[in-house]
Amino acid sequence: GESVGLHLPTLSVQEGDNSIINCAYSNSASDYFIWYKQESGKGPQFIIDIRSNMDKRQGQRVTVLLNKTVKHLSLQIAATQPGDSAVYFCAENIGGNTPLVFGKGTRLSVIA
Amino acid sequence: DGGITQSPKYLFRKEGQNVTLSCEQNLNHDAMYWYRQDPGQGLRLIYYSQIVNDFQKGDIAEGYSVSREKKESFPLTVTSAQKNPTAFYLCASSIGGAATKELFFGEGSRLTVL
Image (tube, rainbow over all chains, first blue to last red; front, side, top):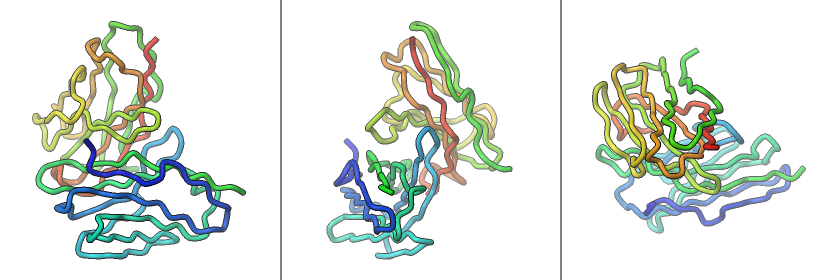
């Protein structure tokens, strides 16, 4: 089975509010994590990444938090906009020659 | 512009037919991947290739075949042995080795079996 999972399959957020998308991973050896955004009918696009030696990384309007103690990853989107509506996937690199493992995704809907 | 090109974007197939999905990249990436995506599910790995003339099965390789004769090309054939081929197929590449890191995705090919 997948080692990466999500707490909430769907999330509805009012425009302007902050969004938090969560991801649980089960492989303590994972050393790298990525968040992807996938708009309808398109391929996933890279948002932000974080290595296991960090617990926080910020981008433009996005922040990724990593809690290795409880194997939890979250993506925070500040001032959510309609253009943020998409499915968000987390992915982990468990090392060796194994490709990234993806979670099932969370659909974010922004209410105007 | 550099990127990954998948074709066709939409494809219809009759049962019992093989179809081939094209994936071309001009990013000079060594590794390429094929994923399948079904509604409500994440990305499931079909095949991947770390280098030319080499490829490995992913989690759901049955009913699919690939080739990697050129660095820039990684076509996927959906054979008649694939029992439920209707899905959205995504091709991706990465800089070097399957263990790396950021994947760059194409725009996908949607296959529908009639």
